[in-house]
Image (cartoon, rainbow, N blue to C red):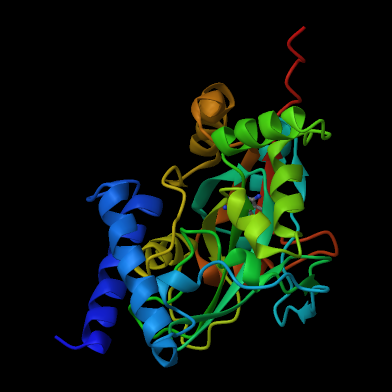
Length: 315
Ligand SMILES: NC(=O)c1cnc(N)c2cc(Br)sc12
C-alpha cells in the first residue's frame, strides 16, 4: 500500500470512529487506538502536504485566529417562534391550526435545546460554510469554529448539496469544567451553558472554540433543491441517515392531548438530560399543511415553542 492509499484508509477509519463516538455515542475503539491512527495520519500529511484535504480528520482545528467574522445572508430566513406558556396557550395554538387546515393535523414534538441556532451548508457532500442565526436573515460565518465540533461531519457519505439547521450547545459536563477552569484563573464564569456556547463559537481563535467541547443537534433544513420529503418527521430521519446528530427524544403526536402529555413528561424529566433545554418545540408534521398555514410577522403559524416555567432558584 502506498502513502496515499494509507492516508485514505486512515481517514476512513478515523471518520468512522469519530462518528461512532460523537454521533452515536457508541465508540468501537479506545482513545489510544484513535490517537495512534491520528498521529500516523498527521505524520503522513506532514511528509506529503500536497495530499492534505479540507475534509481530512486532521483539519478540524484551523490555523491562525481570524481578524473578524464575515457576514452571511440566509437565503431562507432562520425562524423565530411564537411562545406558549401553559396548557391553554397550547390548546389555542391547536385550535388555530385545526381551523386553518379544517381537518385533523398531526404534530412533531422536539426538545428545545438551550443553545444557539446554526446553519450548516454542504456542497456535494463537503461542509463548506457554517453560520449563526444572527437576526434571522444576516448571520456570521463561524465555519472555522463549527469545524471543531466533532459531531459535525466534514464530509457526508452521500454527496448531498443541502443546508441543514440546528442548535449548537455546551453539554453540562463541559460547562462545569469550563467554569471551574475560569474560577481557578480568577476569571468571571459563564452564567449559563447558552452564554458559554455563544461565547465559545464567537471566539476568533478556533483553538479556543475547539477546547470548549461543544456539541450540536440538527433538526431542520434550509436551502435544499432536491428536497422532496413530505413531513418534518421524515426530514429528521433523513438528517440522521446523512450522518448528522439528531436529538433522539422527538415524537410524533396525533393530537394536542399527546403534545400536552409530552410537555408534562419533559417538564419533569429535563433534569435527567446532560444538556439544557428551555422548552418544547411543537410543529405541524406535514409540510404541505405547514405551507397552507404560512407565517405571521411573529413567526410560523404551524409551530410554537412551549417555554418551561422558570425553575425556582435552589436556596
Ligand atoms: N427542534 C427544534 O425545532 C428546535 C430545537 N431547539 C431550539 N432551540 C429551536 C429553536 C427554534 Br426557532 S426551532 C428549535
